[in-house]
Length: 560
Image 1 (cartoon, one colour):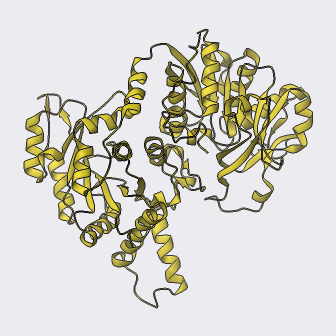
Image 2 (cartoon, one colour):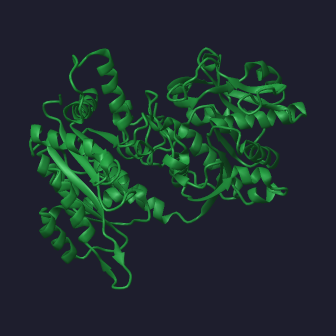
Image 3 (cartoon, one colour):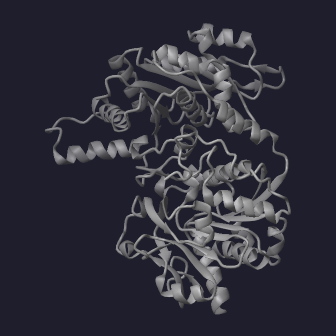
């Protein structure tokens, strides 16, 4: 089932959800990568949806797309950014996917008329899929995060599968990490350990004894609290790891390293590795804390009520801002409010740059078009992502043709100027899940354009998630009026990047560059967009700003 030498780290959460398991998991991966250990990370999601592709961003946050076109949990974005590895669909496993697979096999008769049960059929499917991730990547260590909280009924099949793997593989190859909250009682000014004790008791009741307990808190954790947790939860004192809230998520690997977690994991799993080298990561965190001059960027979207809906965009902007020695100041602007306001321009004043991210549906689109118009008319740097590129093209067509009729058939099926239209292969698609143009595709970058200056390459590979494309019937007339199509599919059929001529920086990409940005290697489009925004702010960029980002020697300039 599993690779002969693969080690496994299983991470669960206790007390409350959203306790920080995803960042803890990503940080453990970073600690191992810093020691030269190859890592793969898997998210085990208890919801019955097959994937989050059809879920509302308000329910689930961002849908992160992998190279192979899987629509996955946003935690995979954190995993990729921290361990600097491109993950695949094997790294996101849901209850819905597991049951769908097992039921499909039952319908085909694969079980020869046997009764299908949670144990062993569902648990075997879970174990097989975790093992598949190990085999596909050849990673020395597979880290698996169980979504939700111990005690939730939805988690039980996953935890039972992990318990079985521990029994089958032995303690030398399996390590359990439990992340819990230490609540602070204001009246007594105390951190309380009892919820953690009960959470561990719940975990032990199903046959799992944690080897490491990471204690999340908003206050420093005294030694006597650590001693108490070690005693009552039967965990090595070294393995009680305080994890106090930090000012940046990128500090978490350094916090865990200082607490000795990296060395403990290596010793416990008997990993042969090199000494830890986190110097580049330390430099990144130091830069994020010392930059003082701000660059103000507005994100105009329809899901701004939940910032996690744009988490990769936010992180990509931070990466680019740090590369230019700037502190990112974000303003989230509700696109629906923008289209309702009479004096809507005031909502966009004071911005040094505007980002319009992806989205679906007509709500808020006119507000996004207003944002694109404001950027074009006032020379404000603009970066459009997926729908943001389509909005750029619609607004420019309205300006060029002198009519408000230009639109996308997604929003107006009978528009006279369908600048954006459905992909031909999407016309007969009825299912909504995993039926879009998904995953990585090549893009030919045309010379003499802003896209070419950013990438420094003629062919790049970027991730997509969309159904609609630029309508080629309008390519020549808009090009004649100043819209530049600086990136296309290699055969020239599909527009991938559009930009406005004679503008400081107005660029839109049909793909999602935010999925490929890294903390030490900002994406070229985000990097140059922020550079233009800094100039818009009236600040002088240092000469080394765009070239002194710490990059690992083996990493290419463009994550392709």
